[in-house]
Image 1 (tube, one colour):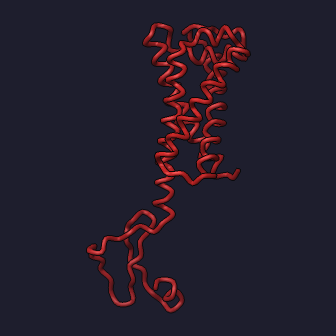
Image 2 (cartoon, one colour; image 1 turned 60 degrees about the vertical axis):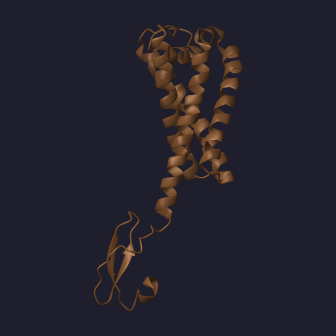
Image 3 (tube, helix red, strand yellow; image 1 turned 180 degrees about the vertical axis):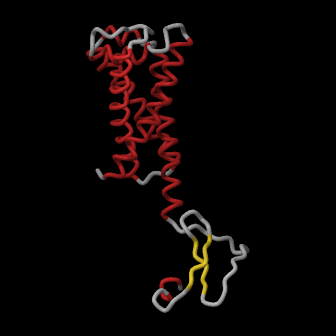
Length: 195
């Protein structure tokens, strides 16, 4: 695993985990359970004194967010690694994300019930399942966007054949990474480079 995959995994985890957390917290609030219930339940898994309702507790909020970011980063890095190994296109990336999100939901359901059954029972099942789907779709969409952006910056942008480029004697047009065309003065040292 290289630095690029780890960085991608961290970003994918933040985006997917952020979307998941906002959905789950909003859904728990909308169903009358309280906005902070989700992070409190995560914190309660490792800190039994954390509340298991929607009470705002700064320590539980901090611990719950740290736990969620760590797990999201691990899942995001797994998605990035699998996609990098397979060189997958956008549609398959979304399917991989949904598959991994579903697997994580199943594993979490059993593991969380074994670790902290009281916290697991307090989480509304349909919200937990849908939140994992939101994570998967958010992470996969962001990864697809990252890959498309990387492909655009790694390849020289195409210049439309009918785009007028003004050049003078000894000046050759060259495309930059941003897609803009800039004139480059041709000297004997770089003449072969621009041909």
